[in-house]
Amino acid sequence: MRWVVVPPLRDMQASVREIETARDHGAVGVFFRGVEGDRSLAESYFFPVYEAANRLGMAICIHTGAGAPEITKVFDRSFSHNLPHVRSLPLFAFRDLVAHKIPERFPALRFGFIEASASWVPYVLHHLQRSSGAKLNSGGDADAAMEWGPKLFRDYRLYIAAEADEDLAYLLTHIGEDNMIMGSDYGHQDQSKEDGMVGVMRRNKSIAPAAIEKILCDNPRRFYGL
Image 1 (cartoon, rainbow, N blue to C red):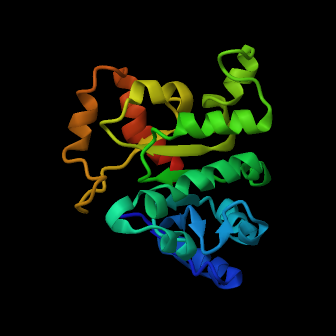
Image 2: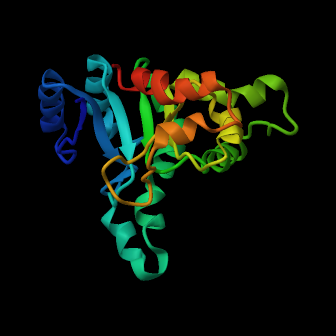
């Protein structure tokens, strides 16, 4: 069984040592939340970890989780449940990493956004387009539209873990069939669980069978370097 290492991100030197040791013992990725403490994942503070993961062929796995105590303090879970301080943090990481072109600094590094679903992708891409001054898909030329679609995910090696009951056919027009993966949260009984996920996916008639096999098999194999 392959696994993902949780490094002590308040100490970069210790994190690099832990990642190297973990790689020697079968780890294939490095765990992050979408915000770590009071730091954006686009900050240069994290570059030593990215450099180590890039060198070792390990993926950066940006998972949901309450990584920012000050954000957690703002929300009352009895009203907001876990959306603002747990589920939304990977969206912030995606925005910042893309806006600051961090993947261009680490040419082999793969970034995954795990257990945050995928329906947010069109919204965040739209925000990035508008804030960058790029032409929108509806009014821009073909090259501009492609830049903010599947080509972005391929060039930046961005992988999105979708859930089986989302509008996957629509999301594939933004993400592309080479950069979507799935998450069943197998063995963990929370909102992301999907019993019988493989069967559910293979019964999905809105997506070509070849694309489904990519999502289930080829893409996660490439993302985790298996």
